[in-house]
Length: 400
Ligand code: ADP
Ligand code: MG
Image 1 (cartoon, helix red, strand yellow):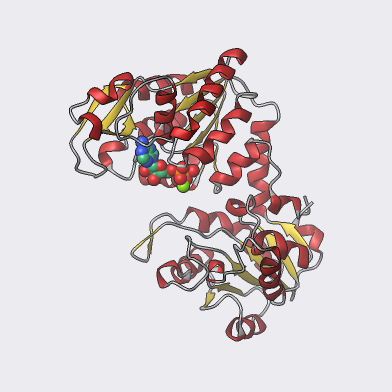
Image 2 (cartoon, rainbow, N blue to C red):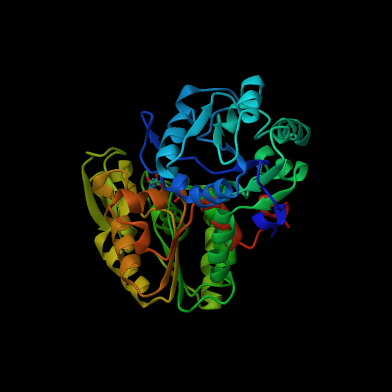
């Protein structure tokens, strides 16, 4: 992977840095600035080198046109505070205003351009459209640094095509994330446990096939646990279920047995009457979800206390733990206990621990844990999972 050093002398050169500043916002207020903090190493290094720095990022999922609620403006203000230096915000990504702001940059100064995804070319499926947009971006700088680890698994203009148009290199965040993930793929200390949860069930099921070749134990919580329970023939009432994945999941269960990999499913579940913070709820056995007080309406929103204890015990005995995806709907206090128990166990084990995933990272911080209690908190959920799956990540391939 080409490093920043491979770009040579950077003083007075304009360097475009693709960051992942996709932070959670609540009414324009940043609720978790972890991704901004994670971007600072590269930016500080470039400032010290006297580069003129143009930051680009996406935020949320606008549909190729400006939408005020997805503006990066609040991010510029927070970044300036954390960096201890001005960060000029420009209200467009490309155009005369952006060109003028970049031309005015002095050595060591920083601008942040508006959300990349306000431009249809950024995420277009049409390569020519992505190329055209990347060309407009490339015209703003002399070199490109790819440091948005959360997007390196995407084929998008600012990730892949832009890297082809300028001298390009991996930034510090991308490099450090890869170093950690390599520890998980090349000879991890055993027992090696992976904890999977969250709501992107079909996205994440794919990783299991690959993990079965490497891990000793898989702990399954979050939304995906119901597809496992259903695959074993249990009813799940109104819980999240991907019924087209049942055969796939049965295949994983059989494969795990063949390989001697332990798949641990929850034995109890917190079932609620509705998907709401104040919904009535009770703990029921995982094989009797339909028998809860809420019958067919019941929704499983967290793993139960027995399961949380068992997961914690497995984590305590592990030497390597990777965790992606909350165990329940942690955003609602009543359904945060499973996630809290897993996070707590990660902070207490002597294992090397990695937390990957935007919501997982936000969850541990929201529950009051701090980054230094974990071996590593990855800024990229999808990217780290695809790396663990052994897939080539398009954004990284461009930097080799
Ligand atoms: P990450 O960003 O860490 O990769 P995901 O995006 O896959 O994680 O999933 C995070 C979301 O999963 C959270 O918003 C959480 O509320 C939700 N979730 C967890 N358990 C359940 C469940 N049982 N039913 C519905 N949603 C769930
Ligand atoms: Mg997520």
